[in-house]
Length: 105
Image 1: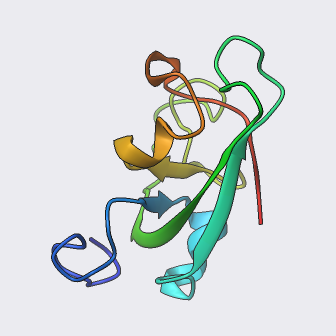
Image 2: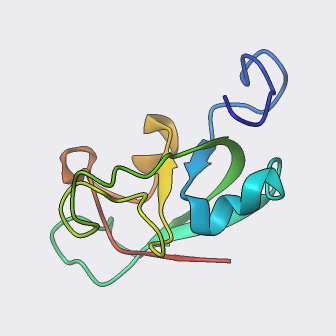
C-alpha cells in the first residue's frame, strides 16, 4: 500500500487496517496512526450497541473524481473516509451495508 508497509498482516499490523481518504491521509503523515471507529446513526446497518474497532492506517484511498462524493467517490476531498478491511468492518456493521456513517477518534 501507499504507506510502504508491505503485507500488513505479516508485518504485525493484524487484520484491522484501513485505507484513508486524502483528507485523513495527510500525504502519508497518518501512516501507522490508529483510529477507534464506530458505526453511528443507522438503525439498519450499525450493529446493536454501536461497538467500536481500532484500525491502523496502512494505505491511501485515492479520490475518484469521475463520481460524486456522495455516490461512489467516497474518498474524494473533503470527505473523511475509512476504507476498512472486511474483518474490521464486520465488527461495527452488517456486512452487506457497504458504506455506513462513522464516528472516529
